[in-house]
Length: 97
Image 1 (cartoon, rainbow, N blue to C red):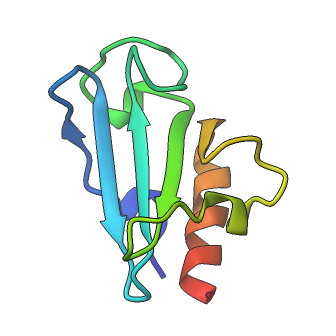
Image 2 (cartoon, helix red, strand yellow; image 1 turned 180 degrees about the vertical axis):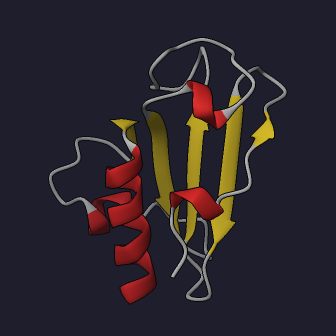
């Protein structure tokens, strides 16, 4: 099972860092941090180790948002300020689908 530590982060063109991963079931998770995303801190740092929370979104192979399928009380398709434990839980839910 993949968890946060398995994500491959890269520097974002707009600053900060980000990772996406598509699971075998076709669901993609996006984990982003920087001055634009809902992360802590909201600064353009260069390593995921520099952040304590991240912006997360999920979509299916048809590029349809599925974030609310995993977090029914989410007010949006993008989740702000998710910590590593919350991201691990989401990644495990995705893989169990």
